Amino acid sequence: MGIISRGFSGRRRAADVKLPPGQYLTTDFPVLSAGPTPHVSLDEWEFTIDDGTDVLRRWDWKSFRDLPAETITVDLHCVTRWSKFGTFWEGVSLDTMLADVKTDASYALVHSYGGYTTNLPLEDLLNKQAWIAFRFDDEDLAPEHGGPARLLVPHLYLWKSAKWVRGITLMYEDEPGFWESLGYHNYGDPWREQRYWSD
Amino acid sequence: MWHVGTVIALHDETATARTITLEVPDWPGHVAGQHVDVRLTASDGYSAVRSYSIASAPNSERRIELTVERLPNGEVSPYLTQEVAVGDRLELRGPIGGWFVWRPQQTEPIQLIAGGSGIVPLMAMIRSRVSAGSAAPFRLLYSVREPRVVFYRDELQALSDHDQIVSLTYAYTRASPKDWPRPPGRIDDALIANTTWPANLVPTCYVCGPTSFVESATGLLIASGNSHDKIRTERFGPTGDQK
Image 1 (tube, one colour):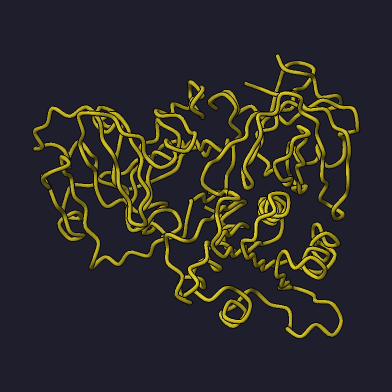
Image 2 (spheres, rainbow over the protein chains, first blue to last red; image 1 turned 30 degrees about the horizontal axis):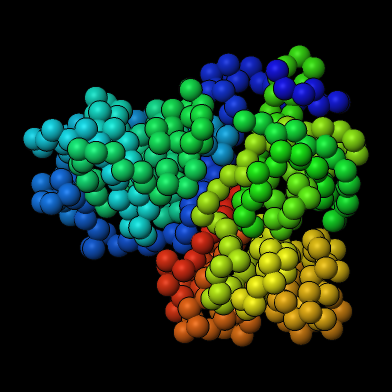
């Protein structure tokens, strides 16, 4: 236990039992981004999966939206310590998008419009754990929340759920993304409180 | 790894914001723009952690200053702005963040744009420029609701008037001082055009404030010709909608 803060009692909620360590509950949806919000038109939007050399799959907005979509209700946990319960999304499962991709790669680097990147093990994108989401709360995803489409990988801290996604590179070797190069944890499991490099 | 800092001074910036000076014997040093996590612990072991920007320049005294704005329904900020006393010890983790930072090696023009308490990490950059003896040209556009909520007023005025360290422009959104040339209002394209570095000088821009402020200011910077990759942002607070 840390140093007792004289006169501090804090504010606890019954719902906190569901929270990962060090998180607090919010009903708002804060926005955290490292740069300006890119505004990507649906005409120019595309999403690719590549292996670092060749593009293996490519979708424009229409062909992406023709893929079978599903609705998802998940809790979100941001490394800046807010969590939001029961968020409602619509998106395409990455199981669907990676279904016919033959690869021996173990890692993925996710790229965004605007230059953001994040890395994660490929297995974390599979088995009903990750989606390319395009609607939130029954509305098209707003640009500041990552629209037209963002990665949704809710079992990891939210910086892994890259906004404004444009593609995924499959890799044999892991490579740190944007925040992972700047002091944040390489994997980012909120339940193990993997916030920073040293966690 | 948590550091222990002892509160050695308190200073009210405004009616709702306070600067806390901490002495941290094993402080590893920081870069202007970084933040710390502050942990409070109740007597039964319950703890709460929040992040606060460092306001002070890197220094050799192992001292850091945090300026904390009290949030109406905050859990940690009311304690830090009302309860904490000189001599109290606080647990800190950091420094954290390697993106929204200014380093003295940077020589290009710097455009700072602050909305409200978003001034705090930008003040650390200005102070770092002073303490490093840098000659990088700095401009600050500081948007506040009204004159009485300005942080660091006298220091900014001195750095601007006497020392020519930073070219300072206030933008008042609700109420301006008497005879102020511009009517109260949000930052707009004219203000960006008249008071910020021209885009052809390729300034690095740091924008910090509430989400809607940052969205609007970065949009204006891009519209005036600044490139996306020269703009760094730090956003805080609610989105303004109820989602």
